Length: 121
Image 1 (spheres, rainbow, N blue to C red):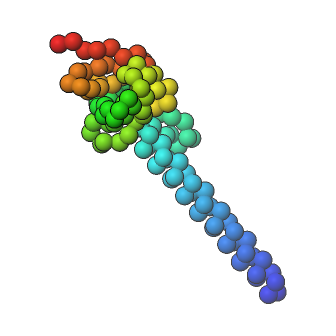
Image 2 (image 1 turned 120 degrees about the vertical axis):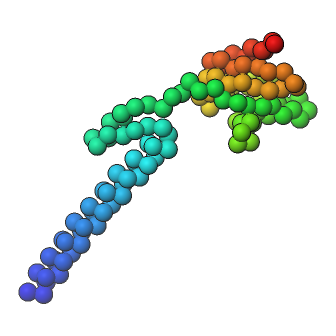
């Protein structure tokens, strides 16, 4: 009889633990999707996608021959290269930055799909 009670208690504990883990995993997935700008339906399909066409504001710091690219608002490092054209390519390829306004040496450059163009006022 005691073995039956232990088995029943173990089975109930297993089901409750399994359900708890599944619930926490679903919430984790929803939170991760929300932080990336995605809305997830109950069946875990994407309801709407993040707007990826926003223009990022970046600035360049030059030390020697190397250009370091930073986010202008958060001061987060984005990438480094030896030329503005290389920075534009790296932004697109590795950071998925398609549109950006970049300040370097009191000049403004536009990065559009991996190509840099100087903005002339």
